[in-house]
Every structure is written in structure tokens, then in C-alpha cells.
Image (cartoon, helix red, strand yellow):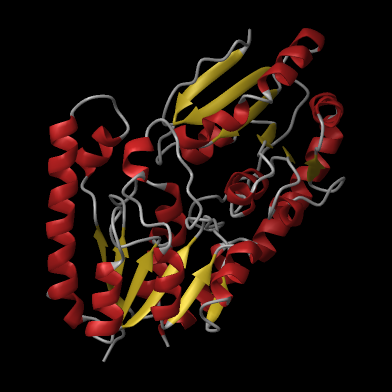
Length: 357
């Protein structure tokens, strides 16, 4: 009999980076391994599209309520058809972990718990301030303790989970370098573009970098590119916004010559899995980043990019990469090779498939 896995996920399929790259990207390899599976989102697409927009309170409440009824069906009925239940981040966005308790304690299912952020730490933004009051941040350690296995996306998350469950493995967020991130930037001396990609919730990280970009644009002629699901308001003379689109994602990223990943030095940022860097480097795009968390592992300073602790370092290293096409080419090649060896689906898929054993 084939192994059967139920994936309990928060977001509509194809819409959220963490879910796309930690669950959905493995679908061809689950099929290849003969594993039968079903991905069961909490939220439907209409609710997701409304969630971070102003107004539409009744529609949001209705959408979340439907999500709870949908999840109740998954947990009380559908779960019995599966050998393993893989929970990505959380079974439901608000309240205590009742669904995880039912899966693991009432039904005694082998539950695998996966997370790629420090989600036990409150992280409030303008968009989620109200919802954060209803969050049960203490549930993460409980779910870890109840689980058959736990998957952390980096050393920081792995170490946290190990406190509550010794059957914990580290699987980084990966890109598929055969089926998706399978192109390499061809660097040239013309039309240089420095770029950043991310979601609306991480746009604030650009605040400290924008003045540096502005000063460098007074010195050199280059563009700044933002790829996100929300357009920022940037006081730059040469910049472009591209709405994030899964279909054009790789080609849009390839418009960059240099990728950036500024972060604050705090506990929440320590939990980040460095996925921006993984995307940049996989495509042969050198990166400049803050020396926080896993960034210090992904970036090998002076080989595939630079780590910057001050404004002066950001300016110096961005200046180097903007003006030196040979450096960009060499760093891009080194970065591509590192991701292929350590952060690609091809390097991690056996570890992922071994979770279901």
C-alpha cells in the first residue's frame, strides 16, 4: 500500500512563499516516490486576497469562519484516510492548538510539524495588529512536543524545537534548480539593477537601506527594483516595482544584477531562513545582506556576496558590485554552486521524503 500524507497548510495553494517552497515544491517528488497526498489549505483564495486590505471586515470574518469549519472536517473526518499528517506552521491562525491536539493526541496520528520562522515570538504589523491579540504564540512548543517529528528551517529554529522534541530535523527552504530556478544570470556592464524581493510584511526592512541607495544613485547610474505583493513608496529617482507573480518570478528576479537582504538584528530575524538570498544566489545573482541568522551561513563574504554591519559597509560593497562585472560574474557562479549543493530540492529531497517513515 502506498504511503498517504495529509498536508495541513494555512494558505491557498500557490500564493504564499513559505508554503510554496516548503510543501508544494515537493509535489513532483512525492509522486515520483509513490506517495499519495492531499494539500488542505485553511484559507480560500478570496479570503487571502481580502485579508491585508482595509475594510471588508464582515467578509474577512466570514472567510476565517469558513476556514475553521473546513479545518474541522479535515481533522475530524479526512485525517483517518492518511498515515501521516504534515502541519506547516499551524493548523489554524487563531486560538489554541486544538486541531493539532486532536490529530496527535486524540487520533494518535503521526504528525510532522514544520516551521520556517520564529513564530513563537509575537511579530505585529499594522496589517495583523488586531489578529495578533488572538494569537496563541505559546502553542508552538506544545505542538513540537506532541509531534512525531519536527522540521526546522535553520539552526535557530532547529535548536528551539529540539528543546521539546528530540526527533527534530533541519531542512532549509529550498528552490528546485531543475524545474524552476534553472537559469543563470548573464552579467554585463550595462543597465545595472540592484533589487529586493519579498512580501508586504517585510517591506519595512528596506527603510534603512533606501537612503544608502539614494546616495549611491547620486554617484552611479543604476536602477533599484522591488518585487513584492504590495507597492512601496520609495524616494528614489530610478526605481521600478514589479508585482510578484509566480509564473514570471524567475524571469523577474533575473532582471537584477545584485540582490539585497537587509534585516534587523533581533530574535525574530534570527528565525528567518534567508530565502531571498537562496533565490538570488541560485540564479547566479550575488547578494549583499545583514549578518543576521542564517545569512551568515548562506553568504560566504568575498566569495558569493558580502555581509554589512554598517551604512559604510553597505555603500562600499554595493559600490564594488555595481562597478565590477567580473566580480558579479565570479560571485554569481560561486553562489549558484553553493545553493545547488546545500539549498536545492535536489540536495534535500531524500531528507524530506524520509520524514514519512
